[in-house]
Each structure stands twice: as structure tokens, then as C-alpha cells.
Image (cartoon, rainbow over the protein chains, first blue to last red):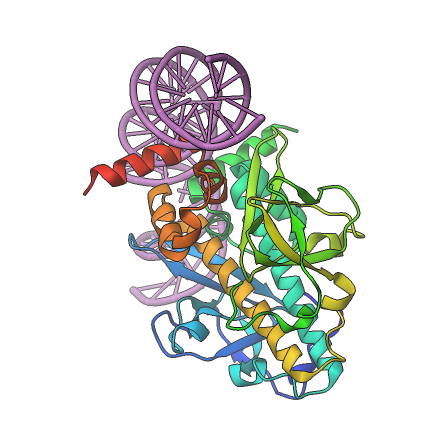
Length: 179
Length: 179
DNA sequence: CGTGGAGTTGAATACGATCAACACCGGTGG
DNA sequence: CCACCGGTGTTGATCGTATTCAACTCCACG
């Protein structure tokens, strides 16, 4: 969820440092916050019945990440959120997110834009999962997130794209060969 | 995007009648509105390079449907929106959607809830496409949208789930056999 | 009626998953 | 400094799920 300006809603807070691999929200536990990433990169993911991780979202600098499901689910998190790199994040209590209406209209507008961008990004993601092949999904990913594709380990990109690491490795190999 | 109350933002407008199959927004054309479904059911979909339809969303009664992409894309629609059944819809000009901030706080709150529900639904959708098998996706669909699953033709459900009609037919056969 | 779309079923195919082995670092401790 | 280790990515062989192509039935609707 990129924006032109830093997210003013919590500009004043001082960032919290999280180390690579540190878990911020754990699936199944009580949780009610979102995170704004100042520096580094977070991710959210779920673990299926076979123990396989499926990455729902990456959140590099200036993105917001959270699990909206806890909201529906009595505050119990569905997704796990952890740090892909050493990062700096600002925490946003949910109460703040869900009660913006009373605030400055500019903030409301900003929050709206964030939501729009998010829905737009998700639309893209759904369409790609529905209609694109493994190769097309990967090409679209590196085109859309060039700076992410060289920071993230292959296996995480694979998980995000709905592929196994082996398959993505082969896709990439074909792409190199093809030029 | 269900809600407890009818969407107040355009309660006053009188609904427009659209016939089954009628196209409201066509991919590639100028468009800048969303629709609130009073009665019936709309859908949005994209057509891939091979001419295959991929349904992004269904919108039965009390849902809102639109293509956020036109907003990013100079007003040119990416998705096509048409009527699955004879329907009654209220049109919402985009200008209204994107400038809610100046309005009554209750409306802002309502719009926020709509966005939240939408993001939540999309999260579910992405997770299911990533992690679930054909059979699991179908079962989840009929569980989540029981009233839709018996109104829609199989081939549309298949398209929504990212399957071919043949595959869904077989999945369904197995399910019947299994009980 | 009869015609065309929807759904089903079968056979062959393809794409990506799985299982397994190995190469290649990057970091750690001896 | 080097030997070791675990994690990451690559490659090969095989497997499985869903696709594709084709034929056929069954209605719904003209």
C-alpha cells in the first residue's frame, strides 16, 4: 500500500525495531493492531493443514500490514506477521483505524486512498492467480515490485505466487535461457 | 459486500432495470461508476488472451460492484460488468465514492465498513486460491455463499473458483459420491 | 418441435508438485 | 584460518491434479 507521503495518522509515534524473523502477530493469538513499515520488510502468511506457508502480503517501506480477519474473528489473528528483514515499524492500534471518522477530513481522505490502493492491489492479485500461468505471475511480480524481487529469497516469492520453490526455480531458468 | 442496512449513500436514487446478459461496463471503454445491487445479481470479469472468462466478483442483493482499476487507468475499465440475472441496480458516480469525506460522519463510517468487508473478502479469496484444492475451494464457496451457489450456473462458479466447468463437474460428482 | 447452451463423461495431455540428491554459499566455532 | 553446518537454490525423475479435446445427454426456450 504505497503512498506519496508518510502516513500522517501516526507520524508522531517513534518506530519500534524488529529483528529479521521476529514474529509480531501469531496466528491463533489475540491481536488487534496493524503496522506501518518505516524501514525493512514484513510479511503476513498462513500455514495450511500440511504445514506449508502461503504468503499473503509483503510490506516494504511505507506499506501497512495487518490481518483484517481478527476483526471478524473476535480479535483472534488468522495470519502470522513477521519480519523478513531487520525493520522499523510503527504500531497502529485497531481502535484508531476503525474510528477515523471523527478526525480531520484530510486523514479520512488519506485512509480512503489507502483502502482504495489495497483493494486495487488485491484485485490484481486475484486476477493473476485466476488467469496467469506460473511464468506470467513471476514476470508480473518482478515488473510490479522490482525492488522487492531482488531483496526477497526465492522461496518467499514462490510462496507469494502460489508456487513451490522448485517450480519457480525452473521458471526463472527458462526465462534466462529465453534471451 | 453485505451490510446490515441498505447503503444510505444513494438511498434516494431510483433503481435502474437491467436485463440478464446486459453489459453495464465494458472492458477497455471509458467508465467511472459503481453499482449497488438492489435485486438480482451482477458479475465482473476479465477475458484473457485465449478468450477465456475469469470471474472476479459476484454481486447479489445489497452488494456493491465496480472496477477500481479504471481509477488508476485514466478511466478505462479493465473488467467487464454484466447482469447474471434480471436485476435492479443503483448507479454510484465515482466522484461520489471518492469524495465522501465532506459528508456526514455516519456515511463515512458506513463507507469504511464497506471497504473493510471488501478487503476481508478479498483476503479470503486470495488465501483460498493460494492454499486450497479445487474441492476445498468449491466446498468453501457453497458454505460461504449458499444462496449464490444454487442461483448461478456451474460454469460461472467454476470460473470464479479458477477451474474449468469440466473440473468442477467432476469435483461435484465426487462430493455426491462421498456421502 | 428443434436448436443451442449447459452439464457430464471419457481419454489423452500438460503443468506444476513432490521426492530426492546435490552444489553453493554465509556464518559459526574450533 | 579453515572445517563444518544449515539453509537456499538447482536439477532430475516421477507423480498427481486439473486442463484440454471430444462426444453425448438433457433441458429450456424459441
